[in-house]
Length: 84
Image 1 (cartoon, rainbow, N blue to C red):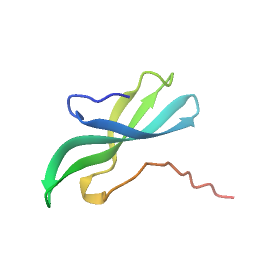
Image 2 (spheres, rainbow, N blue to C red):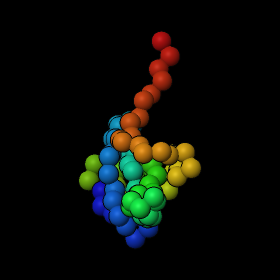
Image 3 (cartoon, one colour):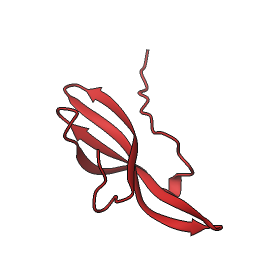
Image 4 (cartoon, one colour):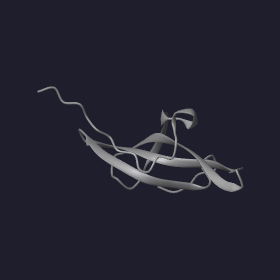
């Protein structure tokens, strides 16, 4: 996945899962940078995307974790809870 007009700085750390025939992806999107204590800091959130072929991805607009909930996330990962 590439950057977009609304997510111009980076798109990174994908976590792709297969749900039936569709693929779902949680990705970090950077929307801005700000100087904090003299250092440039990225502002990013985790959003969902889906695909039928794994090549063409559609951003769903669903925010999984927003700025206020995020503090230096390394890489998203989806974990399913399975009742045994």
